[in-house]
Image (tube, rainbow, N blue to C red):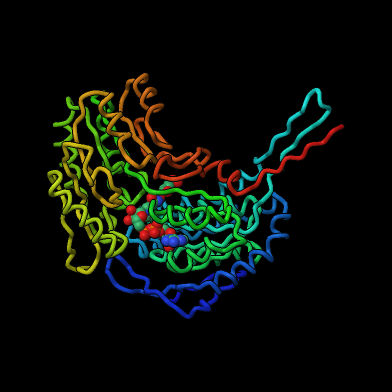
Length: 478
Ligand SMILES: NC(=O)C1=CN([C@@H]2O[C@H](COP(=O)(O)OP(=O)(O)OC[C@H]3O[C@@H](n4cnc5c(N)ncnc54)[C@H](O)[C@@H]3O)[C@@H](O)[C@H]2O)C=CC1
Ligand SMILES: O=C(O)/C=C/C=C(\O)C(=O)O
């Protein structure tokens, strides 16, 4: 099957005539083709978006809201179809795609369809000056949204929905590794009545299509989620062009477990925060620190639970851990496991899994490594796979130091029933998001993003609407 670009409300082959293979990771087999779009394709998308902007930016909030909510309803109505496509393209368990990815993509449209009706700006009465200032929040124009392969439609729509709600026109590039559901979204947008040219979906490699998009002189903002080194490259290109930038990058998140926690809830959630989506979520807690008095018990119970996880074909209901997204990513994760053998002790997992009926698929055992220092490659570099480390700590002070001893600063999880300690640590952890006694509880109104090498800026809630608008102050003397 050939995926096409969605430009000006129509599906079209790339002018470049260049195609990439689309691979099903559960089988390790090519199952379709994706455009590798060129500068000319991006220019076509830009012309369509630029033409659509005056009308879309002047479309009433109510109408924009209605269209976005309609897209969310259409997505919900096609949950199974989209879930199956996402699972096939990415290798994630079908159950996950149907319960998390697609529902969240629908929520993104619904949330921003509603949020835009509540978005307001400020006025300032300049007392003593006989003047009033009011601030306009105007759309930026044509903006670029670039998303990764781990949560394909979930993150693609997390960017597009607020950009459209705020009155911008969009050129969006999904990951070339998982282009399918983004392609399918185009049809729903037409059905929902989104005017042509308002959203344009252009496929291709990062270094070709993505690079041209960020270099385009007229694109006013780039919202990007992906790897930290790609984020740095985007910043190098886009910053001198004075584009607004929102960068949601990698993580090496600490999961800090105190002995006074609710043990069962911690254990179940830690299993999820370690291995959900094959550990390919930037929020996964890949460095697990356990208070020394609880360490042996945790180690025994955690290993037992990890051994029970079933690695299998994404479509099987019994599957807990599906396929890794690509061969090259599997190799990258396996390389880190080799490094782990010299830096720590593999307690469980560590091997590629060959499933007889799908023997070319990219499967990997969930892996737990015991380390005795935070200062090692596997605790410092983002692995982004089903691999976690565990180590004991003695004091709150020690664990805080280790948790913050990282280039990254995306999220942190704390397990404790000591209220004062949880507040103390939450304030001191260098992270954009701290979860206490939970993980991945997402309220879409909250700011989302990281510090240090985990990114710049915040998305989520009104933050995204602020990002996708420019503030203009008007001062009137009376
Ligand atoms: N949110 C996160 O934290 C994610 C982190 N990663 C990390 O990044 C590593 C590399 O994974 P990749 O798939 O290579 O992610 P990536 O960061 O290179 O790709 C993400 C998106 O950026 C695009 N892109 C790549 N280079 C670009 C450029 N020069 N200009 C514009 N767009 C560009 C890609 O086509 C894709 O749509 C992973 O091993 C993982 O460690 C990957 C995906 C998500
Ligand atoms: O917004 C969320 O709920 C999750 C975001 C996850 C990422 O940005 C990621 O894994 O890259």
